[in-house]
Image (cartoon, rainbow, N blue to C red; front, side, top):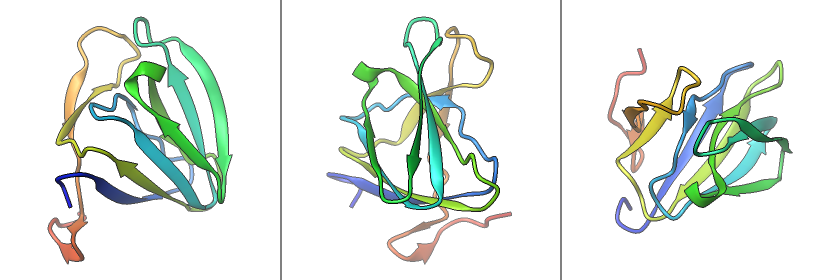
Length: 123
């Protein structure tokens, strides 16, 4: 509803990964619907990896910034699908693409559809 929560269904191609990112809300709940997803968790001060865990189909995960930052990826040769619940919703987050804790970029959620209506061209 973009007021109390945002629910995203993410489809991951084989080997696809997100950048390292934060969660400027009360956290993100993750449910693996198909395949598996790998989570690398990073220390907030220096972005050193502090955890590496793979969630299998049916498993749940949770992260908030107090636990560190993370990136997710599909470690399989086939597609994976995850459901993400953000509460409250957020419009932007910080991302780190160069492995340095300095100078993060800002990113917005590139939704393809909202409320069942296509809002963006996938090209």
